[in-house]
Amino acid sequence: MLMLTDQQHRRAVLLLAGFHILIICASNYLVQLPFQIFGLHTTWGALSFPFVYLATDLTVRIFGQRAARKIIFQAMFPALVVSYVIGVLFHNGQFQELNTLATFNSFVFRIALASFAAYLVGQLMDIKVFARIRRDCAWWVAPSASTLAGNLIDTLMFFSVAFYASSDAFMAANWPEIAAVDYSFKLMVSLGLFLPAYGVLLKVLQERILQVSSTHQLT
Image (cartoon, rainbow, N blue to C red; front, side):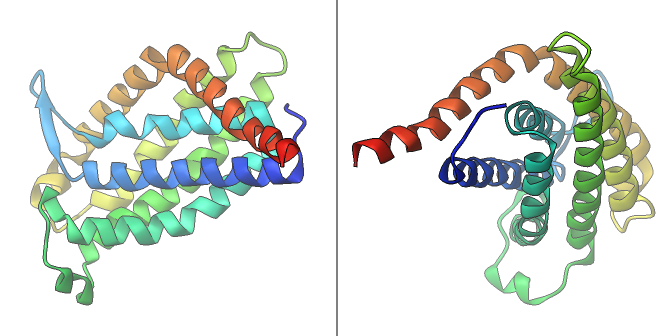
């Protein structure tokens, strides 16, 4: 783990929590936009959400489990609120009137709530698996295993809570298929782009965090 000052640590936590919130909100919007590939139903959210696991694994590697859990607890409530607002304003991918916020949207709230629960359980599972495996294996084994486990729990929880017996007839009828394809896409994105993205993000995070120390020394 990096040895950081309190200022650097706070900056790192805020940066990573912001990244988590951004990906969660984007994914909750994109999950409302289904598409087909090879005749199978999935959503665009499958292509964006895996980067949350990438950020979590980087956090555990650089700062340890405690900081990773702190980031998750800081991100989950803002992400729930922002996800609901975005989901209402951009329902089905189209901008709605601002006055739609005045009426409670149970469909969008279920998506936001499902994302909240799935994110919390999936990320805590990811941290536990990553931290346990990384001690005795090559560097790439832990993030790969944690991604497999975390994404599985996250996907099952999210789609079952959000779309089981949903008012959206299409999602209610097709969520098991969409969840299975969604999980497959998450694994393809996570594992296919994992190594280069992991290296790039690790370098960027280290530079952004450590630049605070250099700036402080010059002032």
